[in-house]
Amino acid sequence: MNFPAGHLKGWRTNSVIDLLIRNCARPSPWALLVLLALVLCTSCSRDKVKPQTLNPVVTVARPITKKIVEWDAYTGRLEAVDLVEVRARVGGYLKSVHFVDGQIVKKGDLLFVIDPRPFEAEFNAAKAKLQQMESQLKQSVAKLGEARARALQADAQLTLADLRHKRTLALSERNAAAQEDIDQRHAEFLQAQADTEGTRAGVSSAEAAIATAEAEIELAKAGVETAALNLEYTQIHAPIDGRISRQAITEGNLIAGGTIAASLLTTITSMQPIYCVFDASEQDVLKYMRLAASGERESSRVAKNPVFLGLVDEVGFPHHGHMDFVDNRFDIDTASMRARCVFPNDEQILLPGMFARIRIPGSAPHKAVLIPDSAIGTDQSSQYVYVVVDGVIERRTITPGSIVDGLRVIRQGLVGDETLVIEGLLQARPGSKDEKLLDNSLRQTLEDSNRVSPIRIVEGTIEVIEDGLPDDYQPVPEEQWISPRPDPLPEVSWQECGPTLRVGVCSAAHDLLSDAKLRPPCVGAQTLWKLNS
Image (cartoon, rainbow, N blue to C red; front, side, top):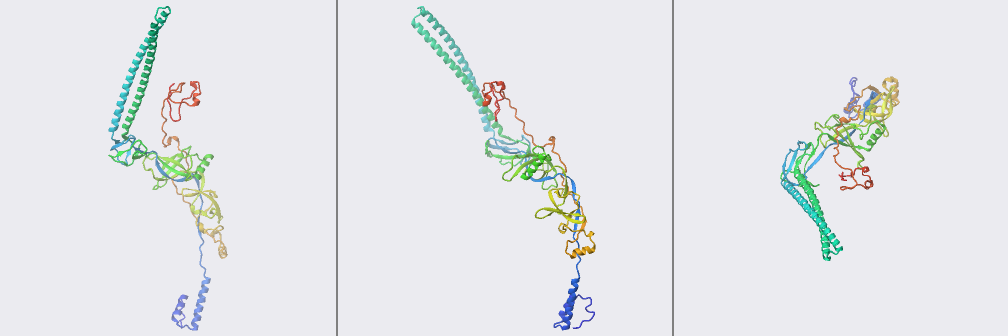
């Protein structure tokens, strides 16, 4: 097959070969030689062309060095300071409901009314019983007067009988009285003595009747107070300020009250302030204890350390509060310790049951080196970074810490003045040199010998993402505390124990003190006794 001389000019070799194959059903020897020559020329030209390679690019920057506080992150749940289950203290017919489901109520607001008529009847009966007991007391007092009058009369009769008996005995010594008169006067004297003893017993009985009547009066007074309380309990008022839930029982139902199984009517949760509880691991608690022992950070048991809170849809931590409580033991099931912080809730955005992100100070303010996580590599035994020293990549082992302002705190391994590889970590190798330091001949030698290829270094910057948390802090002063204050101690009047005790029992050591002035007040562990000497 003949081809024009210029026909192959500009054609690709593969195209010529394809043309030969298509047009030569039975190629001649000459055509086979031409085809073999073209294939050899094509393979030789491919061996001589070497693709041009680009050096890997890495970005470097200096670490950020600044004063920081390492804020430990926890997830907590909001809880109401006061949560009250409103239950009836007496049972009966639910007459009326006086609130709207879900509204804000104030302490003392009327919520429910139970039919008071049965309790009014009990109250009136108790008052009548008290009047009856007071009448019995008056009767007992009158009987005591009668008994004392009879006693005086019996004493007079005894005195007269005694005089007559003695006079008769004197006459009998002079034989001026008969024996019958002596016996009669003696019998009269004995009868007067018996009457006197009987009247004394009557006086004691009258006094006992008075004491019984007084006790009955006190019992009747207690019955009146109980009936009055039950009548008062028919009106159920809000015990705290807060937001009320729905009514669990509607009007017209019979409800149980006064026991553990009393009917639940509704619940009230306080809104401000509000708690946030969270659990700290054993490792974190030990860290806080070590910091407190070294004086770097005060314990939250002693100081009200600041706390910052953010909800799931909020950016940063806009809510500021302080620590309120740390538990006294670890939970054996979770190996964690429960802690609690408190926040103001003037806008009532924080609701009980919500999850929240909180930050508490995990260190004292200190100067630290910060780098991005993209600059940190990890192998089986350690974490490391690449730094550039005189244009050569070197590996440094580091100890990373927490995240601050979007950057990782480096506890060991960097001082802050290094040139750090922040991007292209996988393309860099220890010993790689900046391509600017190598001439073409040396670069070609490195490439031909399959050594570490040079790199192209680009200057970059590390971006700090402010998280809104301060770089310094102080414990919250007492005048800014928002923790609920404990209730004041009740005022109870009492007297010191005297030599003779009518009410209450002193301890054995107390009884051994003979001098009443040296005896301490007779106060029990549970009850303050009013002791009369």
